[in-house]
Length: 443
Image 1 (cartoon, rainbow, N blue to C red):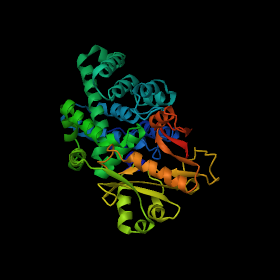
Image 2 (image 1 turned 60 degrees about the horizontal axis):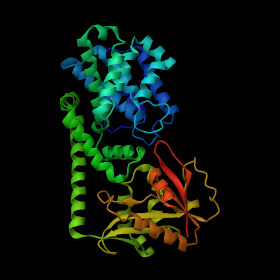
Image 3 (image 1 turned 135 degrees about the vertical axis):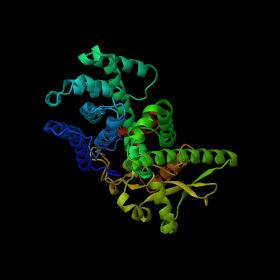
Image 4 (image 1 turned 60 degrees about the vertical axis):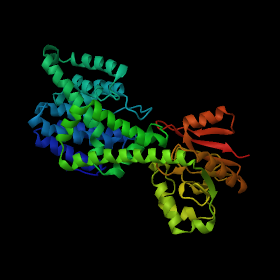
């Protein structure tokens, strides 16, 4: 059993073992698996892509789908001959060659499956009907309600009508639809069955970052996601979970409960802030305090709640807090000596290694301060205080003689500041994240 692994090689080997165990030993299946991995890597969607829908997600879904199908084929709704179709559909269900946004675009995945010459050759060799693969991929559309559901059901019907046996046998068509429902559920639970809560939270952070959500929404939307699954897909959810090993069932249940507990904490924090009319204070921390190990540990704990792409100087965090050229202020609750619930940190642009795509004309001129993304303790996002920290950081940077400030922010936030005629401009935009690099003039 494969737990806590985000290694494509290990996932590949386990997927292959399941296929071989269930009688699918032909080389064409290995070629399909390797072709998928090569495609994702070549499009920048390998392990270095910090989005939710990367090659790890695709392989995790394939692994969990086949593992559950193995049990279901002996006890439930699936048959051994369904394996190759679930295998290919799971591998390609999120493949989007253009990747303009991280949210999967099933139409692009289906178009690729229907038109790619190499894949079609491999499918033909494996005696797999691409129309059924297309129908299964369409069924992974989320959310599954309203107009989206209605229009997708028509697409699925069109795909199934291209398959002679489904066209002539209504029972066969219903079976294929249940296969699609089965895949849609394994798609949504796979990663959460394969690890502990830190892994689950990292997945949620990846999803939020890649979809340009504010951190305020990470926990509440995760809870809504699970509630939708448990309420609207209860029958298939229970069937899939029952088909998985006990440790995986426990992982999923524990992770759902952990998200719900976090949401409960957020509500309690929000209620207490309103009840106590609590205020936040942005504070410039003296160097003596920045040398205090307990203070540094507090900042480190908050810092590691950020998505990884927003963690600058990860390997030298302690040193950066203590460095004399570092600009740092904290957000404290209740008073300027209250508990630290957030901070912002930065320094001379030249002391940072940014993404290779960024070509900042001011780099090397020593006139620009870089402000790292704000770090705020979970539960306190959206409760104000961020603006005060940013303004204080600007004042600190200006006092040190910097003429410009650069940082990253959501595209919509930068655009709204430009509309307010602030002295700010885009330097480099990034898709699909839409988390962009900007420059502001300090005046």
